[in-house]
Length: 436
Image (cartoon, rainbow, N blue to C red; front, side):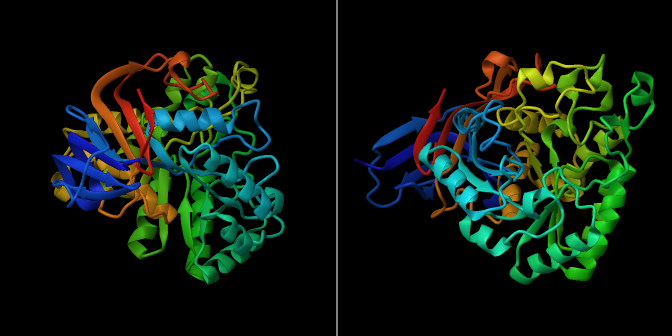
């Protein structure tokens, strides 16, 4: 069988290598062989005509809950991997808040084994930072890393005892591990369900103030100064928080951050009349916060965009706002919502940023920039790289409807929206894993 694949006439956008041009891509034995001209002796076993399509590295998603093990009634590996393929996501990082929690090497190995058997997206788990995510005793980070974890996280559980977080960061620094933290104070805003502001007050919803995020950030940055540990801040939500991140980066602290793609577009006003599809964690904040997120993506304060894919079943979502489970499906929306940000920002040229198109910048945030954070050698199409590729039509429009989603989670605040950018094919390791 000939493992030579030729993708021709597409607009190849590979931000990692500064390519944005109509050119051909040649793949041999699951690896990129060359860009532009065929390698010696190349004999295409199959080819794809990508005229009118963008050819880009497969997307890298920094936060996608696959719900296995333990929450199969919400989603299964099979359904969510299909969603990843339809969304062009070829590498995804899953948080450790499964049931049981990913705090034992055997559980991590089993998850990786089950995912690899599906031969779709590459799954990279985060290990639990503390046993059972209880914030008391540290996990065996070395063993979890050997089992396949690429970093350590508490998911949505906060460590109340700061000494435990300090010890975790000292240990992580010693071995070069990254600690992934969702900045939230253990007490302020606990039990809150919407952004503290006039809207929450009017709707009678318990609030989560911005200082829940900023107080946690001050603590994290002090611990980073003390330990030198590398920290990735997950799902920033506020203008004030981003100012602190900007200052920490300027100071030279080894920190990166991401934002959930729905926070790039939505504000607390999108809750409307208690729409539980808009119940997410952290909550949608004010328009000022959202504008700061969009600007932070442009100026580089925010390193990457993730889907924060959190499938929730009807029984837990079709409830009054305050009782509904937080979470939205996102794997299949990541590309289109990133493109939407690029379109919205096409008119804005900041300083030296004009060198790359807004679309190329958006693709960078969901490919190479995310891959660097996760320490993965993916997200680019240089010769020798794994041939993980997405082909999409940037002009094709599609409507976000439950029936259009492969994910078992059908809930998103974007239901009914028409979005641009449709994935036409997803290639994993040189193999066409999905074709529309």
